[in-house]
Length: 211
Image 1 (spheres, helix red, strand yellow):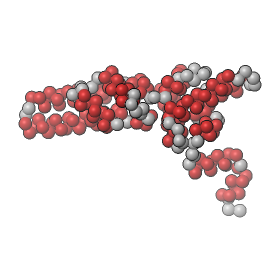
Image 2 (spheres, rainbow, N blue to C red; image 1 turned 135 degrees about the horizontal axis):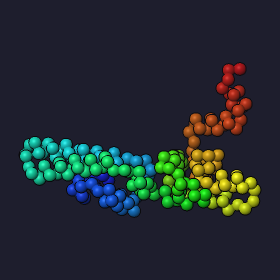
Image 3 (tube, one colour; image 1 turned 30 degrees about the horizontal axis):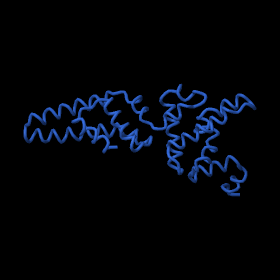
Image 4 (cartoon, helix red, strand yellow; image 1 turned 180 degrees about the vertical axis):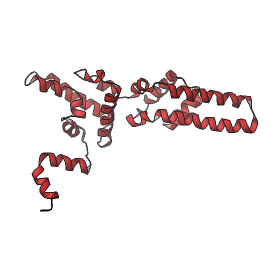
């Protein structure tokens, strides 16, 4: 992420503009899609890159008193201020490669959520991908496919159908185990233990209690 930020700053002579930065990141993603956690690190990397340039240019200015370096320091400081004051939520959302997939949620619930709730779903996608053999986009596609299957059902309880037609059912709800099976999710020992405890509480109690 620091390399991306430094590449952008080099390209723009340290002049930060949010539209240009977004376009630069999207161009990079055209070659290599970023993961959700990586996107979250972009802004700190950008600010760090600017801070480092301010220090370096400041040292040079003290040693040489050069007008060019003076202008570069001013540009870096102004850019750092702009980056700090920028509202990043919308910008970063546009950079999440699998967000378009989630917005196809058959119930339309995902798109209507606030940013914090959508980020919770994105974090779950990231976690599924990290502990499986699938990419984040593939995990999102599987969750959407399951939701669409439920939505296409024309029989049974309509309330259950509606609940199971929402992608959240497979990301943070009861359907997470179904999604896990579809993507080859590998749970941690603690997760396996808790799952076993829910299914067979009596057997697990016999294993852990001293009698």
